[in-house]
Image (cartoon, rainbow, N blue to C red):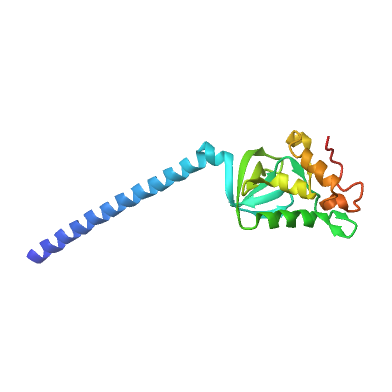
Length: 179
């Protein structure tokens, strides 16, 4: 009889431990879920994105799986050439070389029709649009920049930097307008 009581007591103790472990697990799960919701809904998280970027092309990057269209300037599209020079590739490489493995910080202003974030981004305190346009691998897009990069484009054209020093076709920019 004593052995049976000891077994019953031991089972009751194990049951209490199991209930306690379950309760702690539920609390941890609730805390984790609450944290995720708060992190995703904070206004700061929605307005900024920062991290090491992968360059998609001269005016698009990706950070943490989010594609970001860099606002206010444009670069040549895939396959664009000025004579033998692949200017699409040159713009992408220039941006990639400038960013390197440094942290890129982006102020998000919206999304575009392809559901990419639209943002003004910088690395080391330098605006990526300022860099690409001043190097001559992109151009100001006043419709979106309100002329923010106009001076950089003017200087790049005057010094024949980047694509402005190449023999480019008249249709390099497709049917886009930049006024």
